[in-house]
Figure 1 (cartoon, one colour):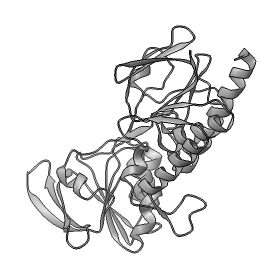
Figure 2 (cartoon, one colour; figure 1 turned 30 degrees about the horizontal axis):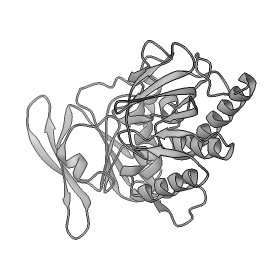
Figure 3 (cartoon, rainbow, N blue to C red; figure 1 turned 180 degrees about the vertical axis):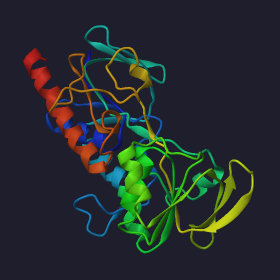
Figure 4 (cartoon, rainbow, N blue to C red; figure 1 turned 180 degrees about the horizontal axis):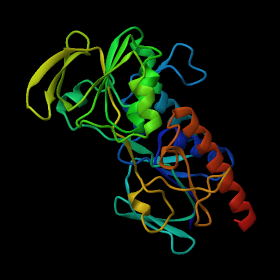
Length: 311
């Protein structure tokens, strides 16, 4: 017997889709994926989600999301989808060696921030190291931070952080940005931003006892090889995001980066009964609240599709 709704991925989008689908008596099956709860599982304080005036820990928030959708009948399996067959309905979804049939599929696989690959990034992730200025900039009010990158994302992050921080250091491994001219001009004309050309972070330094926090970085000149130390309060990695859409290459439409394309004002992909929500289909906002909103949309789109099909 086919599942009415299979949700691939969790996080705010997947769990919200599961909540709405469950309350519509569709008994959705959620494959939570390799990172159940998504990027919020590595986020400490979430202070910009409505309804939590005192803030909430990212993992605690995702537990609340999960428990709420399970309460109404969603089934969450901690399995990773490895294959999807969208050639005909019912579609086939394989996770950890088990294949299920699905009348509709909601894709909420998210996007992963690209990192430098330093061990110290992991050590201080959520404790001074971030990949989202909009999410975490507030915590660095009147402090000095570093932004790493040379594209539009890095320019946007650096400019945004000047609203909160006393100074922003922008590090780029080359001697020219690849960002658009307009974005470059905003950065170069901003008195609170100092650009460090031909510079890369070798190591993020900080305390781990009694409280984890970033205190500085070791920087290397990419031309001369000279190293220097800089005292700093936070590090923002802004070298881009990679949407987790590899499963759907050649099957669903996506942009040059890999974000899934949906029809305007909906979550519909080009395959009937297949919907995409959250960061895997959002290259612009990438916020928990917008992901949850599109998760709601996807569940409603799936419900209406099933009703029209008489399922």
